[in-house]
Length: 360
Image 1 (cartoon, rainbow, N blue to C red):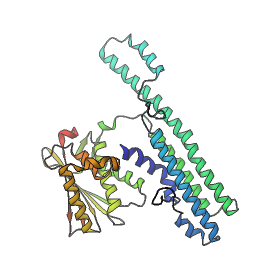
Image 2 (image 1 turned 180 degrees about the horizontal axis):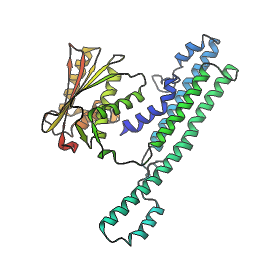
Image 3 (image 1 turned 180 degrees about the vertical axis):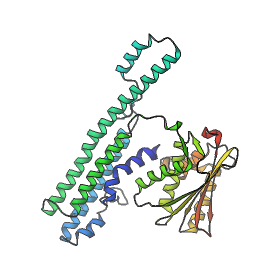
Image 4 (image 1 turned 90 degrees about the vertical axis):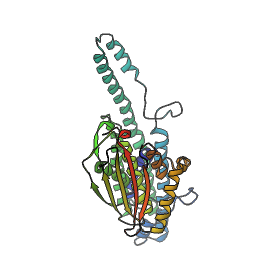
């Protein structure tokens, strides 16, 4: 999905720079990035204001270049290889060397079971060849482009300061470079063959924690206090993508709109019904009036189907994406939102039918 491909990869690759507070955001028209006020204030204590301003502006330029490189990687390389995406890293065809070997071996096979076993070996061997090429690109070409940005930043800061280093910003850049290298290693390992995750068995807390980690990678300042209640060990089959998408949208909503620094989130599970699993996602909200209006709008749009028009604008994320997912449920009321004015919580109620989850 767009959320996973762009959001998770961007969060992973930006993590080191974000933790060192090296990054800034674009201005209102998106053409320029703001100066880094955090480092400007720190540097002003030890060096002339003019030099601090130049370094802070340089960090804004670095942020712009970093975001552009990551965006190009997502849009150009983190794609399925097609005529329209000639630089895509994910090749779905079979390597000629693997096919030729398979054709020569398959002639001697005597049963369908033997054929299926041979084809399984063919699939995994071909997948590993394809993924090894993707890992090589990430670990060499993409890493080289990322490290070049750090080289330019470090050289620029040295020039601005007329010195070989400028503590403490130079130290922060070194730490961010090291963490970015580690992040690139981790992204590369995502392109490793593994068993089909959709066949694995997960509990609701497992899936909630997976989504929480993704949300925290995207927003390092997001530190919710999460509790689970109800049937915590009940197994979910074939639900990894569905539930991580759902919880990912909900955690992102809390991070953006709760207005609470460390919001409490309670995820309740009810499996007493023979046909549906009921989940309530309750989170703190600081502005009850705004929450009530948002709940009313969400319920209205879900009932009349107006969210479909929001999918393009939102890139398949937010309540538009949640609406799309929940329309796959056979429950009479798969989705609704309420607000507890006394507890000041924003409550999202979801009902998944077992048959559409492939579980039971």
